Length: 359
Image (cartoon, rainbow, N blue to C red; front, side):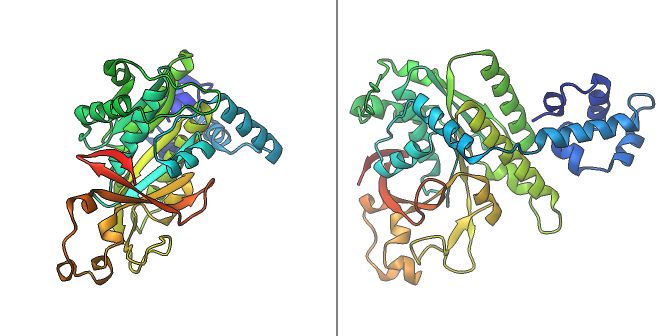
């Protein structure tokens, strides 16, 4: 989020002076150079040191968490859940999680080819097919988004009509595929600052329009945005990650949006204790604290890498090769969730990059 948005009551010359020094975000202002250095870098007469002190205190107050009692939080969540229409993805276990967590931040982690983008696209397409008044925003951080793949996934929902209405909520499947894709908005962001700008633009749009409702926001993937800032010798990268994820959580809660972020995998020194499978030797990237910045973490993997005997021995050649059907089977496992038990897992099938059926 930009300083201009948070510090809207701060005199414009002060914000302009900070911007001229390259200070545009809360992270820059709070974790960059100290105030004395900032003041010395400013053009003479643009802002006083006292104004800088006051602006920083306003920023701290704005970012501080408000105290909410438990009964207020419960009443708010129940009211929001009752007002939101629930859609079904056709994957029962995933639907149970989404029903108990209609908005928030969900992490999909796994190695390359585990099905992260496919599952995110499946969630987005099911939402678009269910409600013609919703919009899905997709932030592409690699330039690999495929409109053809999105069209094919949306076509599956139209042709197979897997969606089933929840009690009292009839499903409205748009007759035109174009009507579905017209509500899928894709943006490119190759760094965290660009992602902040996109979120700010979305906020302005959502604040000025009653509809369409931004029901789902996908960031595919979040790793390239935050990973380059993380290192073992400085805490600044962790602060950048925490600030960005806090903004995502605030966005989800304010606009009742499900935010899906995909995350890459990194090697684990031993078998991952969060997994139900001893053969899982990878873990989500971005460090252990990242999982606590989301509401749910789902780990995805190929079933042949987890369930086959070769996954335990590491010697695939010692066992018969998997069939094409076996290679299409993937596993989704709950590593952590605020609304579901951990180490719960299920299987699903991906064919030609698209989720087809639940096994």
